[in-house]
Image (tube, rainbow, N blue to C red; front, side):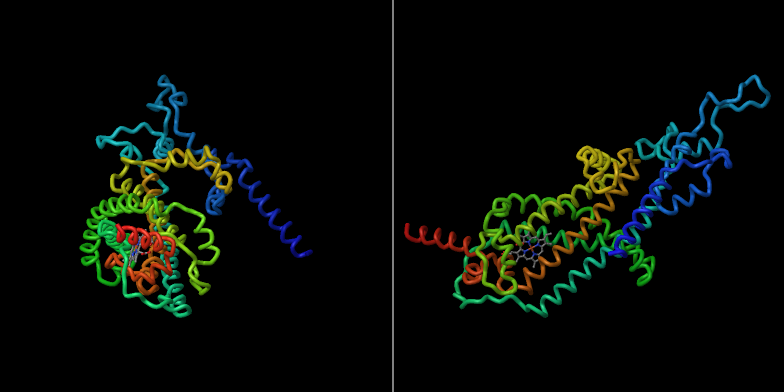
Length: 393
Ligand code: HEM
């Protein structure tokens, strides 16, 4: 108990002192107002630093030496003032190249973005995908293939029409191509250059980029198609609660009743729609650089809802340089893609080697009646009822 108390007091003291350090006014008289060693140290510690002592000092005509004096300056801005104005994006810049992005000459966030992209993003992303693959191998070793429990009937029923299967395979094919080419863009420099050299990487990278940019439209089309085809069957209902409580019967315990899609499949569907939709939107923003910025507007909405403040992030910066918008779009696009790829790896497993009889649903469109009765009992009963009625008329 005493130890816990000491720990709490220690943590509290530490956080109060960090807070105090962040807010303590800095005496810059020794440097004539320029940054001090203390400022540099604070930045290195990742503490918040009020930069106004630099961003606000960008010169002023009022400070210009009078022209009546000998050797007076031509204006009120010195070279350092001007560089600060470039650095903090407040200089009034006119360029021959049109567009807001061309007016930003220095954007220091690029380095942070590059380091994160080449480091943690790639590392954690690979761990996520590797972790899920390992988990599935373990699951296969422990649980084995999920077999059809009852006697097979030798009869099949229609599960997906050809239009549905076309949409699914368009989605699957495009997603896999986008995943592979996206990973090449992200990790190619680290993996392909050391293994195959610059020449080979150049060809692979140019090809990947072309495929990635163009196949994206097929993915978007497929996303719209599967949404239209399947949204009605994926609305949550009461059967889902029971299915989730029973864990889908995955470790024994029978087959909880399910309609056309069970709760697990509904989760997959909504993940694909929401995450896939978000990947598509951020992808289109990347495809037309600086034309479709969306993060400042999103941050503004989040700030208004109070969400970032709620999780301790404070107000998010809504004054983003065009390049910063692109950096956020790239990170979001890649992070959400990793999450969806991990979910899809699990889906591919269960739709192929993981479950006897499942692949036929998308492969042939027809499934063994006994498989349907076990995994989608409510839906199968409805189909059988309809077939009976059709047969009797
Ligand atoms: C290439 C490997 C893939 C295989 C073998 C596969 C297999 C299947 C199968 C068998 C079904 C029907 C399940 C049933 O009858 O209940 C299905 C459904 C579905 N697939 Fe795939 N699929 C693959 C890739 C993908 C990809 C890449 C996506 C999305 C990016 C995707 C999204 C879906 C969705 C949303 C459904 C409906 C919900 C569900 O059954 O989970 N599939 N898939």
